[in-house]
Length: 333
Image (cartoon, rainbow, N blue to C red; front, side, top):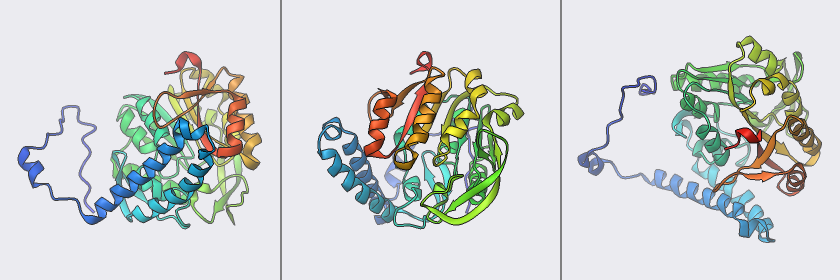
């Protein structure tokens, strides 16, 4: 496959506007493209309905969640096209997921995965910034972040799953993003080695913890603290961190104490989960609160909604899984 060169590194390049002739000559969308657009619109409408205040605060929330949990995976799977995808302004090779719409790969290909979170990350990064992606998978956040920070910035991506790490490296090369550093390590609160439990459904659900999604297979992986990694990198100024490590968030946060102290304006986007991971989520929140972080819930539309630890814990008992934005109040915006 031939990939056109990126012009991001050329400050003088101006993308030409299409002429009237070009617009008129553009081939009509194929039936497959129209189908993907319709299914994507269906997913977005479902997600936006669940976020609507009139739905969230009434018994309709349970109905919307039930419908969304069935409609959205089905639509995303039906829309999936194998191969290199052009999504969120970058090129990505995305593997086919194993389960019926499980694991998120189908949503990655459509760009419907964690849209509010990705939009926030990209809007709050600028040229020359450094972004740290912990649990980077194949680059869904790392690649748009790399485009946002440009060739003078940096993205440090930690991904312990061998298959995902290799694919992330290929995806960075596919876009010509030399500013992406991929480390095949797991982040924790100490240095060493540990068993990394593989998911039978999708690499996205592999974890240092043994979960119901574990296949029984495990690999020995290096453990690094974020403080150790960033010290090796010369302590770059960090604009933001994303943490998605399937329940090991408390260990990652504890291993980044000096990073948080050195970067008072950095934002943190971290996954929170209920059920048997509720206590781990509470531990992460209390650790950050003690360091003067405030918490926000990102919505599809409007400003982030401020949350307390108590309100987050209550929401996790019903929603079970969502991301929380943490920022020190002086850095909010």
